[in-house]
Length: 283
Image (cartoon, rainbow, N blue to C red; front, top):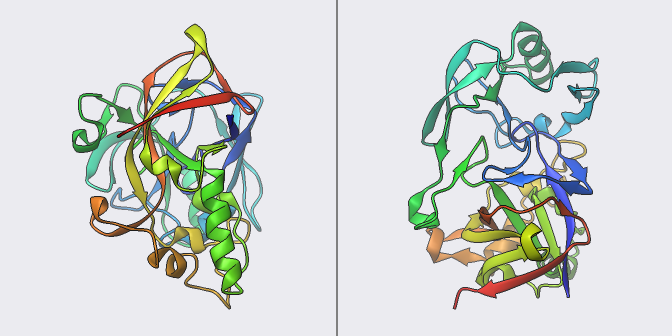
């Protein structure tokens, strides 16, 4: 039997995650996942691709506030709720949307830590950012500040297989956090998620259904240690070198894929770690 073995949200895009035992889930995916984002002076999104130190920005929720820590910085506490803030046009890949600037205090904190002019914005509640219909088909889906889809799903066995390949080269094993999934499924065969159409979490009226719509083409971010913001000095090109040997996928232009982007096709109750999963294949 397959089970849901991990749930993680990333409140600020490309910053640290929060592991959860249970979570609400809706059309936008997990509540408050990628609800905030850092942008530069032109409103372009910032990620670990160019600012690896973002990995070390650690969020938590406490008493109705988003609490943030980073090496060498005092804790920053911001309101968790509310739709206040200057409206600002921001760009995520090819999408430009109106977001809400979170103020001078947040700007000073992130700018001091990253060494660049960085503004924190939150997703505006009445904005819709529509996922690509090329991949979602008849299922209209929206997302917040994720790269393109509300959820990322990875099978635990896929990481085990990758780590076996790394070990054969003498390279260190990687934790799942390097790949920043929202949901990890234990009980699928290695890369079996590549062939799954729908995952069902739970049973009856409370069951949640996810449609896996697009293979996730990886950038070099999995090579960054999410605890230190650094690359392994001896193995700076891993795991991309290993993935290049067997994970090029013509469906995404030859990109090296690991995990599947998903949308919510049926909203039910909360999901929880240990919950039974069933699935339907896409062939």
